[in-house]
Image (cartoon, rainbow, N blue to C red; front, side, top):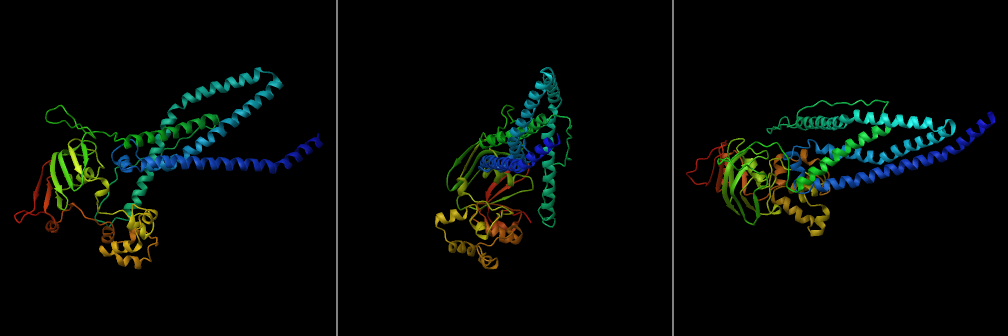
Amino acid sequence: STKAFELYLFRFIAAMPFISLVNNVLKLGLNQLKLCFRVRLTTHLYNHYLRGFTYYKISNLDNRIGNPDQLLTQDVEKFCNSVVELYSNISKPLLDILIYICKLTSAIGPLGPVSMLGYLLLSGLVLTRLRRPIGKMTVTEQKYEGEYRYINSRLITNSLQQFSPTHYFSLQQFSPTHYLVYSSLAPPILLECVWFCRFTSRITEIQEVLKELNSGRYQRTMISQIKSDGVEKLIPGSGEIVHTDNIIRFEHIPLATPNGDVLIGDLCFEVSSGTNVLVCGPNGCGKSSLFRVLGELWPLFGGRLTKPDRGKLFYVPQRPYMTLGTLRDQVIYPDTPEDQRRRGTSDQVLKEYLDKVQLGHILQREGGWDSVQDWMDLLSGGEKQRMAVGITLFTVSHRSSLWKHHEYYLRMDGRGNYEFKPITTETVKFGS
């Protein structure tokens, strides 16, 4: 028996390199499959997420998903890993069970394996029923973890802006992270199925939300708003948008927030191309809401909006967006260097653009077009605004010194009333 043991041990040692090679090839194949699956699923989701203004609507209009960034990154990765590992984690235990049944049947007869198999099936059914709440609990856990990370990221962001006059408020409430402890006595197949179902529900949810947002539908807790006749309610998306050049016209549009809170019941005015309008009024009266409706970020609750196409209107925000990349990327955004070459735009033309807004010195100061910097922190507030400057029709401001640069003013009082009038010498200017 000693010689037989030594023989089997020698054979096992001799086979170890081949066993190791096979196992590593299998791991390589599984990791490659995970990567390919994740790349395809991420590309599919981001094609919907970045279409139009869906990335804005999913966080500001629809309240079904609190942390889409976590879903699109961590949950997608875990889902892809679970899908790939599901086959191996199920097939191997089933193969082990089959081998044990064959061995036990040949040794003690069929009664023993049948009894053990029946026990496994019965315990599996009982554990599956007991574990039904775990799916909902794990989904809730992921939401809490996402909110926790979101709050920490906001804390870091706002700690850098603590001396800024602009204040930022988070709509998310702090929720502690919940941890679920799974029993070590549970069969591995059942645990794998629980985790797979958990991530499947999360991925399915974001796919449905993105599909509905791209089709113009969203779900949000609405404030009951009934008109004076007591019959008709505000319906998101019931208004009409007409794209026409050289004019902006609001016709009987109720200016309302996405949850149905009406700011102005019936907004009507018209602005022709080349006319500058100053929008003024107290905080919360609807100045920013007007631009969100104009930019098609918020839905129309009625009336008709006539405006140029999206690509023909230019918006200069108070804090312009600086993209990651080179100085050239800041100037040509949202185009890419490939788009610039395809259109035949030379760097000299870009230099002329910078000179027009008095930013030509940045090209030499920062080391050329291909210099990569943290432009959001490197450029001053005025430089960032000039980097994104354009011809504006509307200006939102509380400064009285800007009145002389406009021909009309749109004043909102914050109580649902407004006035749209030309600026004359008799106009009473208000503001700081």
